[in-house]
Image (cartoon, rainbow, N blue to C red; front, side):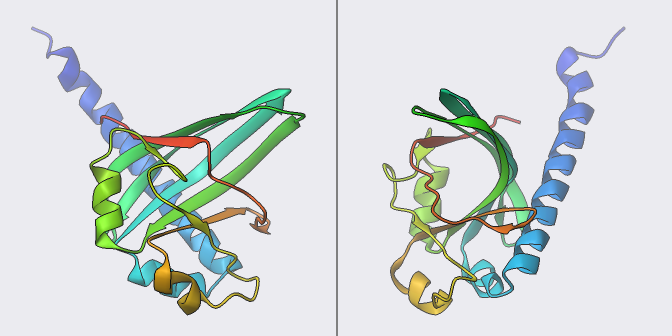
Length: 171
């Protein structure tokens, strides 16, 4: 007899999780190459959510999607997807990586217990301008959630996370 369908799908899900873990860790390495001062943020964070490959496409209306991993104590503990829509004059595609640092345990717990989390609605998120002269220590002294957005060519500035909803992926 054939094994149940859920048993057959398990190795595929495990491979997908390993690929997502590896891509997320590689994105963190790229971040540290572009902004070594981000290391102190990563070390102090209660949790680190990494979206290694976000794609934003716009032709009049725009959309954004990516999947990533949440790391707590350097272990991937859950997987998330982010999606958002935007309107206005836009044309083209943009590829980027996004790292969201939960600097306080309470902020991390609120995120993990939410059914869908939206930056700017469920929590205030500060976009870190690491590499731009701002003191990392000063930045995180009062901020519970910090985000860093970058591409293969370096850090990206003047961006917003508002409008993007983050939901847990059931895997």
